[in-house]
Length: 265
Ligand code: FES
Image (tube, rainbow, N blue to C red; front, side):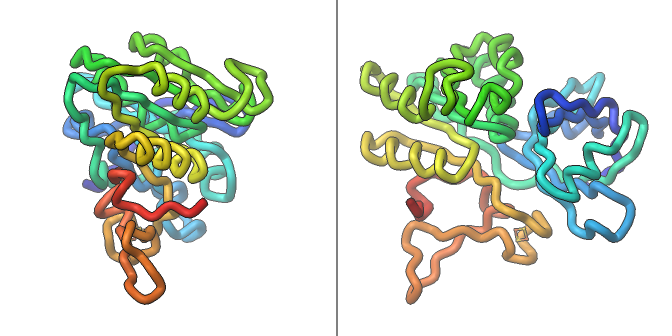
């Protein structure tokens, strides 16, 4: 659905990272965790294309709103950061597939970094409401890249933090903490991951080696968001120069089973 949305708040929560809350139609609050939206950040013709964002949080039927996290990295996101409460922007969504929430007898190992945490928050929210076991592994280069930890803790999620410079949590890569946890785990586990490509690829390899079901949410560049331009495609597991095998991230994803895709190192 396409709708006009009023900005309710728009705040910088860490250097270059922003959290924006927008009004939404009542039906929007039933968006599935993992779905995304396309936002027209400006009324002018530049930038022409909408920008994709994961849905971070939603309100209630009585008070429908949604939130997104974004990082200012270019003209589009800088424009978004210049908007104030009360201004109106155009939104398309919710779009794409959401996460498959698996079975309640497996521990959900949620792995994310930066604004990749956005689609993982509503997933944690639903899983904790169902009393499904959930554990969060969040990583970043520094403390400033660790976003919204208090929101996850407020859900009752056990959070493991790792930063490359050691400024918060354990020093090193978050995937190491994930592997250490898996080494000690005797029951079933299922990783869910959203973040930088290297993090996705590392978790996909860990899951593959241990034969765990793993879902990844991709943050590919998107132009249309509805399967029309094929600007977002990513190689499927059988892709080769002679036998093309692509997945359309906006229409078939952004969530995929990690073993459906081809991972470059
Ligand atoms: Fe156009 Fe996916 S963004 S097909």
